[in-house]
Image 1 (cartoon, rainbow, N blue to C red):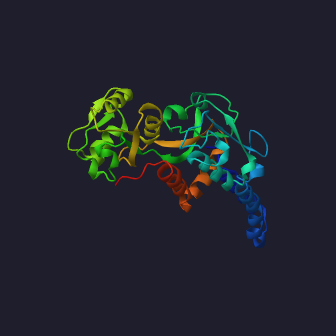
Image 2 (image 1 turned 60 degrees about the vertical axis):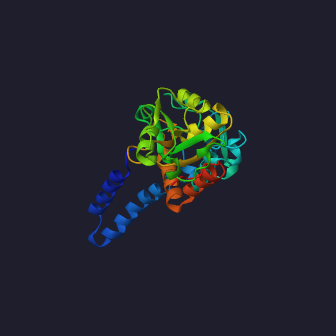
Image 3 (image 1 turned 120 degrees about the vertical axis):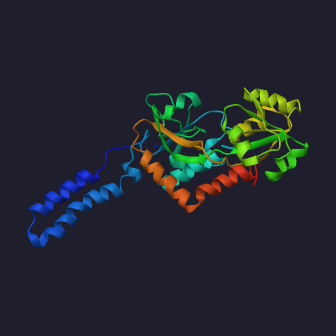
Length: 293
């Protein structure tokens, strides 16, 4: 979220060796039998052991254009933008230098279609869902999607710096989205949010100043301000409470042996705090989406 474990096989070898050894040599023989298996397990994620699309290279797929703040200047290879930075951090943990990482264009919809892939993994704000996981494999989540508040620049609530300052706002949300529950449970506005059947309806209500702000997931908020509503801004972002959080995962061909090695790298980035630092740099500070508390 994978392959048969080596532990059962190696355990059988140890027992067999121990059974055939003289009594005073049992521990030595068992150690000798166990060492190759332990060494093999330790080296399973060594760069030279990985099964790659191109030997010696880590091939990464993403769509074109590659939008900010996930990438910078439509150039995934520059290491700038959240997903580019995450990719190179994972690659480094796996033993790859920057010049050993190559990029290939993969349209979003085709990335999670069934069938063979011409990449080692794909990174493109792809939500982990049960339906997609039937056709492809995912790494553990590298980003938990937050909610973004969008308002027209210069209006009363555009300068809010806390959730409390939004309580008197008339907020629009799309029906059936995480945003609706997030508004009710986290912001808890004085007026129940205005609910729209389509996201574009909420956007139009904001344009026409029928509402003060809209709440959408943060990736959509970036799109709204960049392409849908001229003169709008992201007031800030906040985490939704409860429920199953939406997460982005790195995507692999079904059955890829690389998943566990990438998960190991992501685990190290999470425990060291580096992944959180990358998120803060590219999705908070540089993106102009401060945390609302």
